[in-house]
Image (cartoon, rainbow, N blue to C red; front, side, top):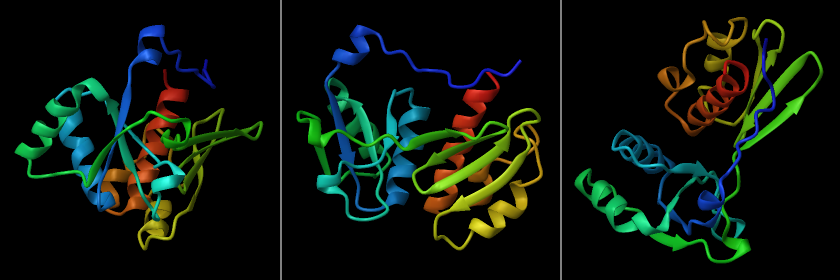
Length: 180
């Protein structure tokens, strides 16, 4: 049986941890930093920037503030540096969650940033890919639509733009929601 709408329950300890965000000049740097930090075992999240610092198709990395120096050392070894690191001290500086889920009865759609992926809940067949403005979106749709979540290639393996990255995030969220 499929389990939809899994909620992430935060413990009191997780909720009380002070958070910070790393702001990078280019989205590609965020993607590289995420890969490096996660491979190094750090618990981080890629999110949308707070509206106060948003300049376009931006992403930021949210992290436990107490680990700032260690994370910066890890990135420095890989020759990647954020433009700035900001503690999340005010509600207005909170990063924006990238994921939005919409249940259409027979269909389930996940949106990550500006990319959407829709499946048939019963069969897990991908029926639509939409959003974004990157040149690889039609190619990604052609490669994914008509396949099941289990049989579809990972969007990150096919696309190399912000749209491909966002579609990968939506795809991963669908896998979490549907194949737990």
